[in-house]
Length: 201
Picture (cartoon, rainbow, N blue to C red):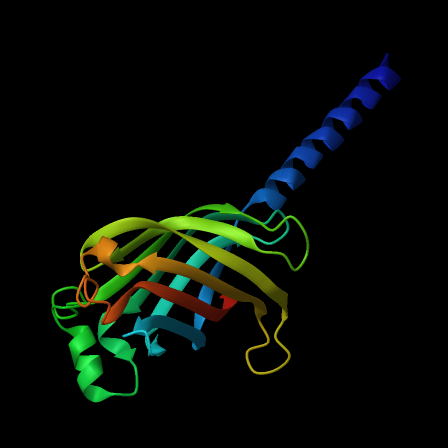
């Protein structure tokens, strides 16, 4: 009887430890985007002659993500609208104004992450759905995400680092930015691209 009780005890204990270990693996890891390695680019057509490139120079973000299970628990990115840059002062002032970003009244562009479907194979493309808020309007967007690399950084901070690329295409008129759309002076379709390194907190 004692031997049977002892066996049951150890089986129960091992099973319990297994559950605890499983729970530990499932817990999210917090990551913060490194502002020194965060590029936010956009592209929009100009009168059909060319695609104008631009950047937002200031942004930040944090997210909770388990690299082992590839599960995203939450995430948010904030972009300073005033930091828009296209290498032309008058154009940048126009983009900050009422026809586009209305940056004085709406200083922050926010992306709130939602459902994430990871790539089915290494090096593939995952799909991230979320909500994008610009000039007070919030609408769903879908990003194609590539997790490029994970590992200990080889110099400097030497922290665990994730390298991520993401792209999306939106129609800016959905957010009320319809300047130049009707006469095709400025394209409605805007391509967005995000490149960043995130550090484990």
